[in-house]
Length: 477
Image (cartoon, helix red, strand yellow):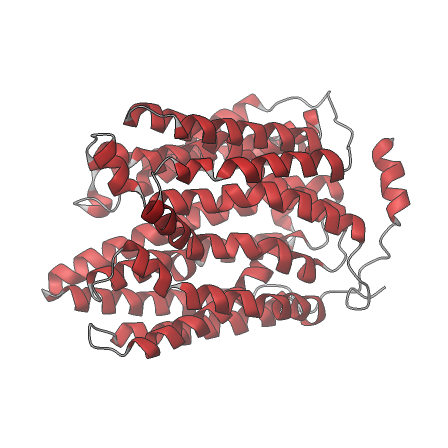
C-alpha cells in the first residue's frame, strides 16, 4: 500500500502524543536555561567560567548516556525506560529549583542531562518502531516540531519567565509537563517485552561515552581566547577522536554485539542522513548562535528582545512542516532536502549585508523565509535515516543520528564562534565580523546542498501496516 494513501494509525498517534508531552520539557530545557546564565551567575555569586558548566555539564551528561540507550531499552523495555528517564529528568528539575549554590546546580543539571540524554533517542526510536514504515514524513512533521522550535522559541520563553519570575521557575515549569507525560506514558504507551539476556558491551561503552564527552567538552571551550589552539580544546578533541576511531574498529569487530551496531550505516538512507546531519551543523545550528548575537550586539536588543525578533523564523518553520512531511512521503528526502537548503541559503544572504541601519522588516521577512526552509529541511534529516530498517535496528540508527546531530551541531557552533571573533578582529569591525560569519553560513548551506544529493530519492511503497489489534497482541507476547 502506498504511504501517501493511508492515514496515520491512531495507535501510532497515541504513542507520539504520550512521548511528545513528556519530551517537550527536555527539548526546550537547554535553550530556556541558556538565556539565564548571567542572572544565575549574579544570584549564585559565581563567575562566568563556573556558571557555564550549568550548560556544559548538561551537555556532557547527554554524551555519557546516549550510547547506553539501546542496551537499556533491550533490558528494560521502551515504556519502562521512558518512564524511568522522565522521572530522573523530573527529579533533576525539582532539585535544580532548590539549588543553593553554583556547584549544586551544576550537579543537578548533570542529573537532568542523564534523564534527557536517554529520552531524546528513545523518543524517536519508539515512534519509528510503532509506525513500521508507514507515513514517516507526515509522522515526523509532527514529532520534529518541538525539536525544531526549541532553539528558536526557547530563548523567548526563558526571557519571558525571567521577566516576571525568579530563575528557579525555569526548572519548575518542567514539573507539570513531566507529570502529565508520566501519566500519558503509563496510560497510552504499549508495553514491550524486555530482553534480559542482552549483555552490555562494556569495552564499547568505555570507548564511545568518553569519546563523546571529550569531543563535546573540547568544542564547548572553543569560544574562549585562542579558539581551536587552546589546550583544553586540542587535548579533548584529539583524545576524543582517537577513542571514537577505536570504537569504530571495535564495533566492526563485534558487529551486532556492539553497544551501538554500526552495521546500520551500511544502508544508504542511514549513512547519508547521518552525514548530512553532521555536516549541516554550521548552516542550521551555528546560525542559531549568530542570529540572537547579531540583534543584541549590532541592533542593541536585550536577550528577550532578540528572542522575540526570532519569532518569524519559528512561524515559518511551523507553517512549512506539514507540507514537507507530505512531500517526503511522495517524492523522497533528496528533493525535499535540496529545496530546504536552497531556501535556507538564500534567506541567510540578507544578513551577510546587514548592519545597524538595515530595515527591520527586511530582516523579519528573511527570517520568516529562512524558517520555511528550516521546516522543510528538518523532516528528511530526521526521517530518512530509518527507511528500510528492521525493528531491532531502529534504536541503533536513532543513537547514530543523534550523535551526528549533537557533535555536528556543537562543531558548527564552535566554527562560527571562531569565524565571528577572528573576522571582527581582522576587519576591526564587529559588523564586518558578523557579515563574514553569515557568508560562511551561506557557504555551509551550499555544502549541505551538495551533500543532499546522496540522500535516497522517491521511496518505494511501504508494506501494509499490521492492524492495531495485531500490534497489541504482539506486544503482549
